[in-house]
Amino acid sequence: MNGINATIALAKRELIRQVRQPSRIVASIITPLLVWAFFAGGFANAMGPIGNSAGSKLDAYIIPGMASMTVLFSSIFSSISLIQDRHDGFLRASLASPAPRWSIAAGKIIAGSIVALLQAFIVLLALPFVGVELTFMGVLGAIGALGCISIMLIGIGLALAWIVDSTQGFHGVMNAVLMPLWLTSGAVFPVADAAGWLKLIASINPLTWAHTAMRLALGIDSASSSQAAIAWTVSAAAAVIGAALGFIVIARRLHAH
Image (cartoon, rainbow, N blue to C red; front, top):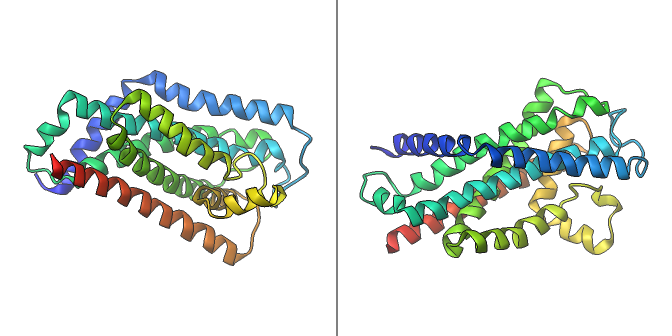
């Protein structure tokens, strides 16, 4: 079995596992929508129009952030499966097969990203209800930015899942790492209006740039061509680094075993 076939087989396995756990899928969608309803309702008049879209007030501005929250939750669930595979002995069986070690990480990243993007797309469907028109290119660009977020977060999650090796401990570590990453990314507020120290943190946070790329694609925000290029470059680089981290940690740990 070559690497590509092994990756496809492992990705199918992960997709089947996640589809058989509908409660996790529902939770990943419902929670961001509830957070959106809370912020949009509680701070409905806190912001004026943003960008070029007539409906781009706070209720529209934070929907991309809610979509990325969906991806974040989904990435946590995808990474937990690595801990379950270790405890169930699946990884030991994989070592006995001709499948390359990197295919394990690749299969989980691909399957996890597919599920995460489908969930995030459902959240994006709320945009027309707040006055933002969805276009094919806009949705395509948003999915691209969300894909970068998903790959980065799942890669980081897989690396941490192997190191922690405990479902309970993993939840704590992920909340301590990923939630601050999401909260300081301008997911629910414009970074330009933040305090100076928060602006600094946001400027080096890759999620900030992914959110910027997503809002630009959807027409919710506006920026110069150079800023847009930086946003997409940083987003793509973060995805590559996150995936590489997952590949390296899993390959080294499996080799040690």
